[in-house]
Each structure stands twice: as structure tokens, then as C-alpha cells.
Image (tube, rainbow, N blue to C red):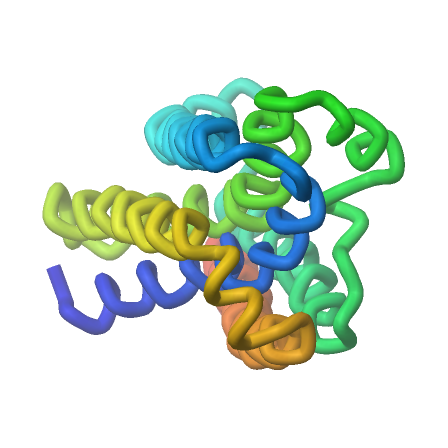
Length: 215
């Protein structure tokens, strides 16, 4: 396992899950909730995020084989999706791949908001799923073996653990950083994601050209 791969996996997964940027949304959705109810919602968010990302990390390759999806094609499509999310983050917008108007209406329910829309798609959205699957694919293709694969799962666990801590103290953090501070952090994460997305696309294009014998 290379340290560079492990750090890249963690930084990218943390950026796309974006727990800091999601704090204002969490506070808005859970406004008026008791501390006990908020804690239950936070636990649901973390469990759902972990399960969803682990499932796609473990069975992503199997999904590829069923639908005949190639790794280069998925990298290109995933990179484009990530770039659209990053573009929205950099402009202070909420990506349509993360939360729809229907999701916001569902947020009127109490504990269920920990599953939808906060767990899915706010934390474990299409961008996070795509990112995890691509890193797992890179780990298996690069010859890093079990160590590189383990780094991806550790990155997911660390991201969820940090998200849990941030959400538990979200009220105080939100009061200190305010909406503008959270938006600024989200834009920085968006810039990082944009660079990662471009790298995914370039890697996918080069790999496709190589596999089809053009090089």
C-alpha cells in the first residue's frame, strides 16, 4: 500500500461526503429536534453511509460484470458526475444528484431523515458511491492488493467517524462558522473534487485508448 494512495482515497472520499458542508442542511432539517432525537438521526446517517459505501465497494465489480460496464467507461462517467457535483459546490449550490424537492418534502418525517434525505443522498450520494467504486477498481488494477483495498475501507470508516463527531457538535460549530463559513469550506472541497474528477476522466480516456489498441 502506498501512503499516497491511502491519503488520496481518504481526502477524496471526505471531500465528496463533505460533512462540514452538510452541517447547515443537517441543522435546518433537524431544527426543533430534541438532543436525543438528533443523536438517533446522526447514528442513522452514519450507519446508512457506511453500509451503502461498503456494499458498492464490495460488489461494484460484480455490478460492472452484470451490466457490461468497463472500468474506463465508469471512470469517465464517474469523473463527469464528480465534476458536476464539484461545480455546484464551488458555486454554493446544492447538486441535484444529492437532494431533490421530493427529498426535502420527505424531510418532514422525524428519524427517517437520517436515512432519506440525509443518509441518502446527502452523505452517501452518487458522487460518493462513484468515488468509492473507482478507488476500489484502482486498488485491484494497480497490484496493491489487500492493503490498498483496506485503505479504501479505512478511508470510509474515518470519514464516517469524523462526520459523526462533526454532527454531534454541529450546533456549536454552525453557530461559530455560520452559513458563510460552511459554504467557504464547501467551495474549497469543490475545487479539490474538480481536480480529482478531471484526473478520473483523463485516466479513463488513457486506459480506454490503451485497451482498445490505439497505443
